[in-house]
Length: 141
Image (cartoon, rainbow, N blue to C red; front, top):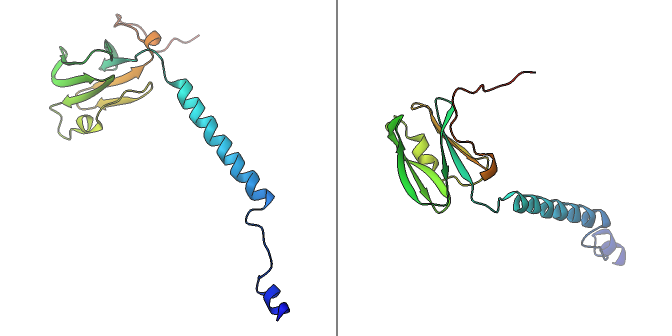
């Protein structure tokens, strides 16, 4: 009967092998590294939203002051800044995808209303530029 018990796996087995523990440790360290990078990438200053019309920056809006506004270039597109985030709240476009996007607040996020040629982009405070004249999009050297 002892032969039958050992053949059926009745002997003592380890729950985790060394390879299992090594893999779990690597995954845990990778998760910590990603969390650390995300924490460090968050700006300590409030971000700024660049509003683009026809692919040109027409306004830079700080996200630290709650407000509702429209652009003079297209008064049918209305934005709301609230609690450090911005969203399209109204538009006369057919699908309203821009409105359904909701609030964005993290550097690098974008939303757009393609039929109205309006886009919003969150940038770090130091990189926001006020609207300038006809500057080139690309400078070739």
